[in-house]
Image 1: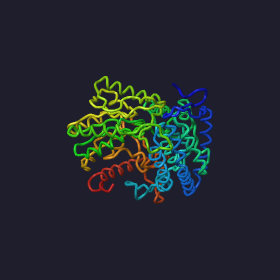
Image 2: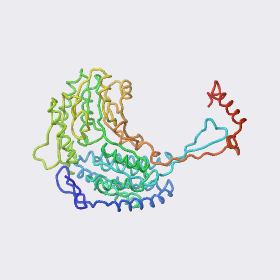
Image 3: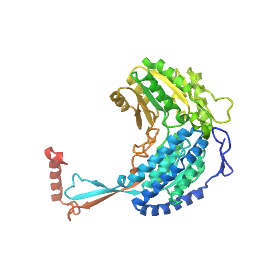
Image 4: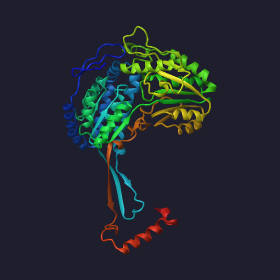
Length: 504
């Protein structure tokens, strides 16, 4: 069932079923107008001093800090997630990211000298990092504040303008974020928000933007990538995952079980970095599974009420179609012989979109819950005997976003981590990578292309400037002569042979 009706976005709150306020859909012509206004605003933004841009970004940080409860409440209502997660997984990471890049942008984007190894006596040069212009952000519904606003802040720090197409399932959160941006004294045209569906997103990519940052499904990412390729627009995409956790026999079993349960079920499993596959050594399989089932069964799921924010661990699922995917994966696993140890169904007497946190065993490789991204509260567990077997199974996936290793042997865990095909591997913890601004975020294989966070250079155009050390040029210009040829022939043979080549 579409939530785009008569030129409006019409949603209901995932946890309560109550209707949300409708939001007008941005038309393609309005998208183009927003991009052009952003381009003009970007020119003025880029001319400001580093100190002034820093001041305004830090002002946004302060505004967000003052209005944290308001933002947390909105995120929680619009996504159905616990207020604790809205605070710790969305608002606080964004406060940190804003401070980090506002205070470091000038240093991160300073000119980089180039030492010319072959021409060093004659030439010198440097790289300069210029703003790209207008950055298009197409963002998802699972983290409707942290993901798009992380892209907004890093883009602004790199002196760009931003036009954001939020998910049609969570438009209010990004509209609130823009309100805070304006309160911070940032030009209203510099950060535009264009609510809408696929047509609005396509219009944004087809407008005169200079870079596209996309987070979403593989299928949609391929379409966006093809559109960017046709226009030769740089494209960064994070497209999901099927993240594996390998639990080695020397672990503290209870502690590892707690971490795995948290990694599987935070945000109701609706995270690209969720643990969606567990490989546990056969020697600790039974106690590990027992702890996982006990911990999972103790989780509190329900409506995230502001008056009792501490009383739930899991909330609702945002999108109706995603709830159906979870159901289908459970039904497929059960039909093929998997056993459900806890959960496995929709709670009774609920008007919201809930699915119980579910633990599956006797899982095989051909089951959908092992092969396809579930993006919901489902935890399939299998055993392994040898580490090589665990590595093979973990890497046997079209995805490669995150992976996890649990072991008391930190050096052995590090060696294992470097055998896993993933953009990030976390040892003895659940995912914190996206919330760490100095760390690049992205994946291998079908999990995406390019990186966000970590650096601002991917949001910049790079210019090389080459300068002479002396008023003298290389003798390679016209006219070519036999004497020049013989000179360079002798020079090349001597330069790249023996001791001389060691200094080049």
